[in-house]
Amino acid sequence: MRRNIIQRLTAIVLGLMMLLAIPLTPTAAHAQQPITVRVNGTAVQFTDVHPTIVNDRTLVPMRGVFEHMGFNVAWDDNTSTATLTRQGILMTVRIGDAFMTVNGQTVFPEVPPQIVHGRFMLPLRAVAEASGAIVSWDGTARAVIITYAAPDATPTEPAPPVTPPPATLTRSQITLPNRRLSDAELENWMDEYNRMQGPTALELEIFRLVNIERAAAGVPALETDIYLMMAARFKSQEMVDLGYFEHTSPVYGRFTEIPRLFGAQAAAENMFNWQGATARQLVDGWMDSPGHRANILNSRHNFIGVGVVDDMATQMFGNVASRRPDPEPTPRPGPAASLRIGRQSGTVVAGTPGRAEFSLTTRNLPGENFRATLTELDRANHLSLRRDDIRIRNNSGTLEIETTAQTRAGTWRLELNLDIGEDDRGRTIWLTQNFTLIVEEAADPEIRVGRQIGHPNRGEIGIVQFPIHTQDIPNGTYQARLMFDAGGVQGIILAPSNYIQIRNGVGTLTMEISLNLQAGRWWPRLALAIDEDDRGRPIWITSNEFELDLLHRQ
Image 1 (tube, rainbow, N blue to C red):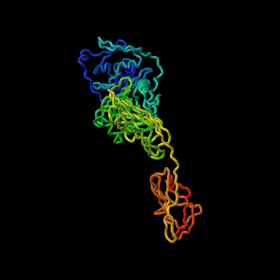
Image 2: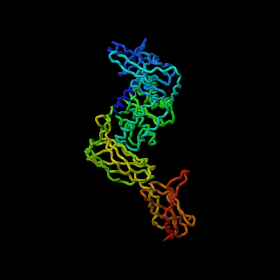
Image 3: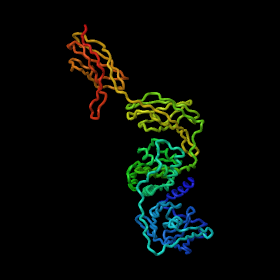
Image 4: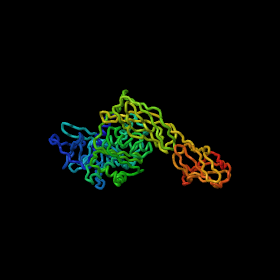
């Protein structure tokens, strides 16, 4: 059933390619006998342009048939819109749109309205059946037969006003999780897209305005691609559901990967985050940005997908048509291909950039270098692969995860995805494995001063030193000072300056003692300024009390 729905949508969306339609040339068979139309037994007379068949559907001039059916047909040059009204019915159709509105509801005919030989032609069956008429085809006589109940002369309530399409899409009932969808979940999402009648009026208006910009620049018009349309909608929804705004998906990686889920290929991507924006505002915003403008006007692009969800809008551009996937699940690697991730090697601490390593053991992988992506199943934040490819040699390799100062402490569930090739339809085959990363809480920084080395001699300047051992203090040079409980002691200078260097948790406290300093013992503390607060004031930490012996031995 889904195949039929997609085929029908494909036929609809491929019809959207026209903005400046090319006149159709009648075939020899059509030239032999013109198509006739009879409304309640009366033949409709056509003057300059006659009915024509496009993709097995009959198109007729805007007036003619529908005026015979009692419609009042009006044309608005400013908006290029035809309006058909009859008691209880209001239809609007605009040049360039693949849809029409019937009493406020969007209807997608199998063949869109289009210009033929300079005349605006409408799909006869779609319009007639939308008004309640019965339409049949006599293939022998090449005649369309329309039967409808003519409205009586009794006035009825006027047709309800047409409600303009909302600027943003109603939220999907399927919330995208922070993990890869299973094949069944992706199928359900695509089915819902189809149940929502595919592209929205806003998305199609963005497509139309993009082609207007390309025409003004002398660039060929784009075609919509139903699978690129799905991919663009999926990307916009994922940004809303997962709360991010960037080209790289936290689940699927580079912007090219989401289209691959649908059998599409994207060469470029534009995005916009603008609550309540109209199609005109979105396209103007993109055109005002050099990079986005270049994507829109790139002559190598032939296809486009547009997706809008809430305040997120996405355009995806393709150079080649999608490879239409069948409904069957995406092939997965067989049991011969396997991946195992070992235990964590290396300790990483919250608040400090670090790196953890994991050993990889594989079997029967087709190659040596594999593109890799990392999925945070628990949203630990600020985790990344050290490299976006992993090398496997003799069925083993190493996975390196980097943390930042913003990485939170905890036990985080992650998923490694290895791209091990493509199936026969060009879809990525992923080999996935879950594993756990432990980020430890940062311990309180600590300083401990050891026993004194050296004693000053009477009558000369003396130097004394103390070993320093620290914990959780990064390598660096720190401002230092001595703290005495009984006030300051004159004649002690930190040498060579009021700074101490810490390397790998070890340092040296050096004091220069004046020759006339009174002999005695003191128990000071050492203070280091290890950071600054948000106002730029130093944050001090203090050591243990240590013994300073100034007996001036001879």
